[in-house]
Image 1: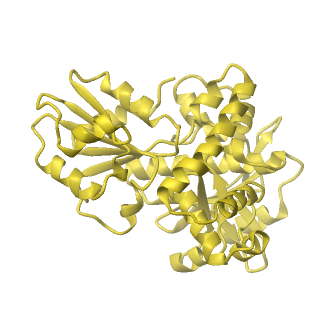
Image 2 (image 1 turned 90 degrees about the vertical axis):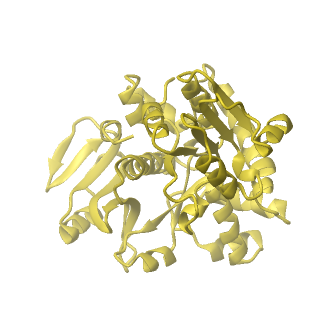
Image 3 (image 1 turned 90 degrees about the horizontal axis):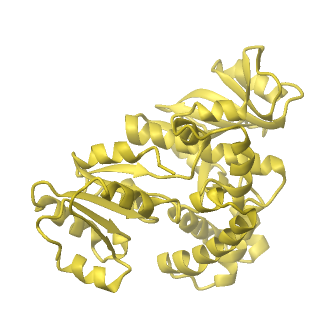
Length: 375
């Protein structure tokens, strides 16, 4: 299956380095090698392979190479200065594509000498919008994406049992390989328990104190573990909307998984996670490809009333989205928020017979709404 971002990546390679990152096994290496087919003398090097590591260290590729793909380069000491050096001294015509499942965007937050030398592309799981753009989306895909997740291998598996087998190996690999490789963890059992608790608390504001009590570790350790999960593209945080950014960051976030198949809970929890990852992918697309300052939040009053999601642009709420499995009536909270903020409101329903407008609120099939997003 083609990935919709391929053309945009190739276009950006003609301008700067391209950083392609996202969750483990989301298809980054496959896409990089697919892009390599467009070049006459590409070279793929993975820092995890000893033979490749030697070539990388001594910059031993041929001068005629026209595409250099560096995978897992973030594991190399001083990798940022290394990339800066090879980019600034590259031969004319050499394109550089850097891929990885962790760390590559962390320096984004603190500034770096690589500023101005690269374009960022985030590859996230398959979505209704991407499938629709590829001419491969049907409403039935919603059920399949919810149960299997949008990672290519489990989604495309002919046998659903193979999807379940993939996920067991995926979870084991995340903890035993990625997490331990990323951070020195002294209490393996504790970080496993934190992950298991998060899988059961999707859609609810996360209390570090509550999880700490359940696992019998400190709240700071819980926060550290969740930060590691976030850095490795296992989970992502959604914070409440606030014009005061610092204030919103301090409020309890909601935690969602990049792989909806990891969610343990009822259909409502899985559907909310499914909506969250697709809205995040939409936001990432607008940021990465249009350079627009969008963010994904949720809305919450001092009284504890909530709206599942809010898309904001330049720190201004643009649309609020509430999710439900079935439609009975417009939730009173959504009506109140709609009246208060005076912005568009969408009620996205998984199983809906008829779309309609009611009191200014758009009641839409989730499959339709999601298929029309940017990515």
